Image (cartoon, rainbow, N blue to C red; front, side, top):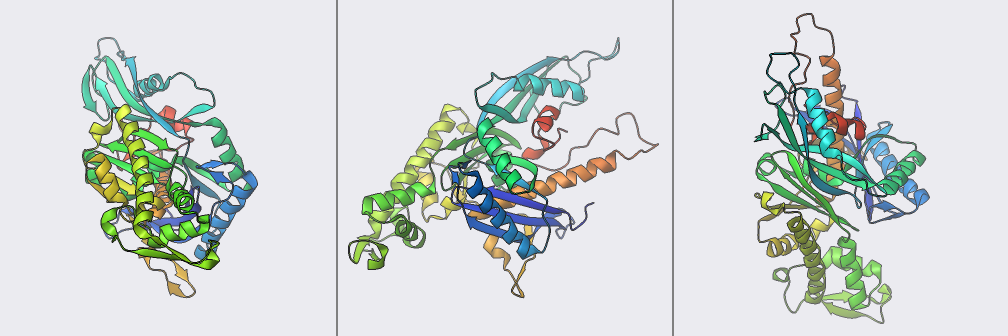
Length: 449
């Protein structure tokens, strides 16, 4: 189907780190397509605040370094990337309705691809907001003559078609700055994807996708949120605080430098009191810049971290309750991103939401990387900090497979019937849900089936 050397690159541009994952086409034991990771680059971010570019030159340099590190590891050439979008996306649900007419007199009205596109356009006709543009439009469900729960109404009989769609908007200026930054890096853009969609692609299992799940990506500067059920997106949002705020709190309360506070958080930090004894201490060396060697209570650090994580989850809960979508979260919550590495974070989330919580790590990939003559253990990627970049690369692979399949379908076949040129439904998840109008808006991201 695809050449094994057809390269895809997932680029996760975060507030703390920029991660690039290079992958290529592979198959699993059952012959199903799978991403094979062949290179990775990870560098500290500069010129980025809360997922938004604030210094193009600095950010561009970091992007180039991350991709070049992955290129040097993989030995592959890179021309384009699938770039994650975070920090400024917002989602809303909307309804579009169209009348379906018979194509010939005497025939019953049959829903066509054009009717679906018109319904999606109707749903996407939302009031314009300054400095925001529609980024994605994805169907949640269709209704035909008020009969709901329909995923694909194509060829059904009815004179009224209604679609409930999820619309994602993004900051126009932030998107333009990001595109300009990538242009400076001399990499083409295969696509730009909200990071929550990439997270869902890499960390969710089919049962969660079916019954309803919330994914919370705790980044350094922001916390991204998505809710999915039955393969459809019901909510997309962002809370403008993340894991870096925990570091800042530790530094401020305990009068420490930011570097030392970060080391304490990473090496000894927890955010739930069940994981620390009352008498545990952390030694702060003189070289840290503090006023002489001293020790601090590990429980105190825990209290500081828990307070901030509690605030983050409380803000997420308030946002999904205001949107009236929490009832769709039946399987529980999956935490991912670098902030999910803080021990006890799942316990805090369970206390706030009162539903099951797990830590999500990427799945559905293989690893083939040689470094210094030795094979790299693929277990290092079973880490929530890689969820976004791996998910973006997996989406890039899906797009290339889809493109190849459509090229194959367009080959002339004298034995084709009148409807044989209509694409069949293949694949799972969000990415088979976008209508042609959304395809145009997102520059060939996915086609509606």
